[in-house]
Length: 503
Image (cartoon, rainbow, N blue to C red):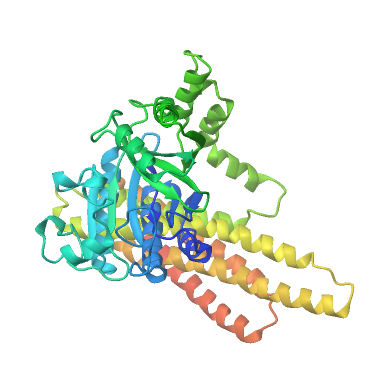
């Protein structure tokens, strides 16, 4: 599993409801939204999402789709340069993830956004296909933004997109790429002097200025009556944060101005904090390995499954069989993905390579859907438990409690049914995998089939027990029919699997 960070920038920083709708789309997938920064003056939001690469890619695609629906670039105004509703979407490798993996994620996402959403896409950074697009300011800057692109995209070959149409609609264009970790760092200045802020930014940045690996612009912050030197530090290891801050501070004070604060937008790696600590406390031997939370994170990373199994083995009622059934199904889907990968590109399997690629993509999507179902099953049980604990002292309270219990029983039925349905959807490809998959991994196909069967049957047991408490007979009859159909499908799939298992 490859972990990545994605830091999409959206051209909306004033309407919280719009940003929340974008974040909600991301949260439908097994990813973690760990930071949301909204800036009124820039009219821009920066969201940080982390997780397994394919899951992050899927979540971000749907966030771009939502942004295109709720943000109109024809009416957007803000201090920050922008091309589109989803303006910039960089992928960043985490831990031992190779950069090439992020480059592939960016390219795949760009192609899909252009094809399905009809939005022009430009690849930048290490994903750039045109050398002039490696640096973001060479694509979009203060002097060339949405309005200029709208006029130039159809006639100027320099602005022909990598994907999508040669025209922009109300969603504008999106710039997608892969890069190393970037630190967005701002320094605010008083009194408000935009001219001086721009001069300081010009002196600071690498292009025409002093500091390598720094991109800088000057802005007017009308809301706080300050000016700002807004910077992107594209290589904090070569040009550490303290060096940048001290340089800007000296430039500000030499002009008779004052630094009022510095600001970090989004996330910062521990390694960058190490340099700040070492610089200001003059502790040259300090290392992030001395931070206890760093050690704990390493432990948790290695023992996440241990933690889940401990919870499952405890006397708590959740997570329980429904959650475990979803995870068993996710493992079955993961094995299908693995065998597909072990078949693609191998000698003797050339004729099924395209089929295997399609199967692998489908299986990967189901891995993360079933993983999310495990969380949803636990949450559905917790919601039901909350309803059971509602007060019932008065007739009104009793009625409200009874209604809530019935609603949440239905939800607790629907979730495991969806789990079983998702797991069962892979039964149809098992015969193809057994006949055409890498023969050295055929045992993994059998394991996948058994796991998927267990997922369906376990999930349907949860459907069955919840149905026994639901009073809506029409709902009960509908789900009983669907449950029986899935059980029959699973039983038939198991029989087919067992025919040749021991030959």
